[in-house]
Image (cartoon, rainbow, N blue to C red):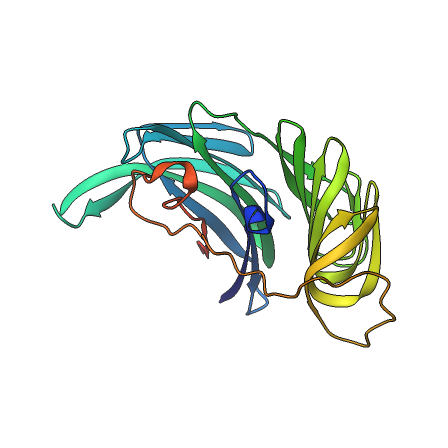
Length: 273
């Protein structure tokens, strides 16, 4: 009795570093009734920790390197976190194993959006700072900071204009990258307006827009939209459909394959009642 729409965003596909994944799950009741929802994340039971909205798993990959998967999940409704040992089987042995399962629960709602960042790295690498942010008109978001770079993802579950942590937008979801305090890349899905720092961009409503700052201008590198095209004021240098090329695939723990997120546990939202 629910529908789930999942959107992936893989920032590295547009150049630069670091390598991680943003996931937006839009879950809605299709029968008009309230339900309880759980987004489940599965990881190895070797080492797990949680601190508020953030969590991490640690293990050793197939190259015998110590690796960490760090994550944060925020939602449009009040969440509670619960962990328990879960079971899986290794097909080659058919023996039952246990791993750690994290549930992000939302109770008695007709819908919810979940925003998640999954950030894999070597244990010797720089740890990201993952933060949840809130704003006006129901807007909220998550952000990741590493060194002089900060990426912000703003979610707008209600519609209209939201202002979240210095980002103003009417889009369903917006992305802004800051380097040394200046916006260098940005994009949005299902919207027409994005303002943040040195970026001020307004267009007709489009399905998505991805661009970068160049010479003080916001240059579009990928877009898709509808409506009447206005007189162009920005240079369109390329058009392509942003399709994640390295989407993590859920597998049974442990998470292996190094810090490239090739076997990152993927959240699975589902109703629990």
